[in-house]
Image (cartoon, rainbow, N blue to C red; front, top):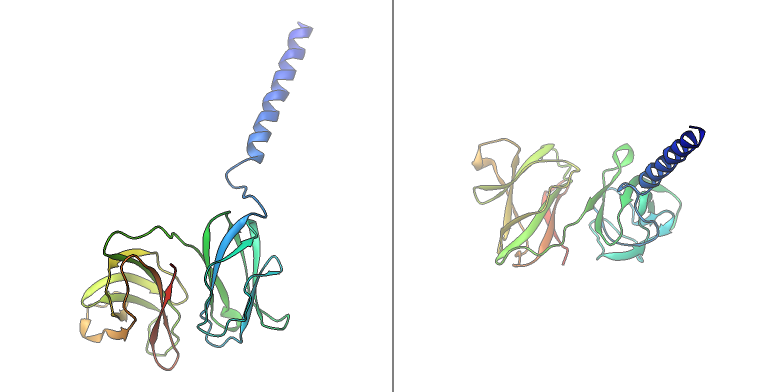
Length: 229
């Protein structure tokens, strides 16, 4: 009986070891130090030129002024809870800080938004799968602080709503729409008064492309098209 008890204890400890081993290799663990692709957009109207750092390693080569953006920059800084900081270029002054999981071989955009206590780095993981034939993939970011632009807006193509309920500072999901769009309309979220739509001209959206459209401005509302491919 003593031998059986000893064997039982051994099997119990072995099972516990397997369980711990499996736990330590859970899906929540992200490999550290592998490549990620990062795009940076300075959508913070009142900010000075900015540099962005991941774990104190500078990502961009040139400082980014308001409305400037980079292409995708490859950096070996994947991992859990990566510290992302935007700093005033040439100084240690921190504009905003964010913690984010960055998965290897994925694509991300860092949007710098807000000011003062509302300064933020909005991080999105970008699906760069090509759209269907004749389509574009598009998403919207609302950062306009103009007094008559509401906190939450709907986006229109003509009289057709193409994005709903985008809050100031938020980024909508990518969606596919017909190529060739040259203007968008902005309306208070939930409103049915189509005569109140504010029309904004944009560059032609070409088939097969992926875009973010930034709605911005404090004295005049404008739209800026940012290409991802």
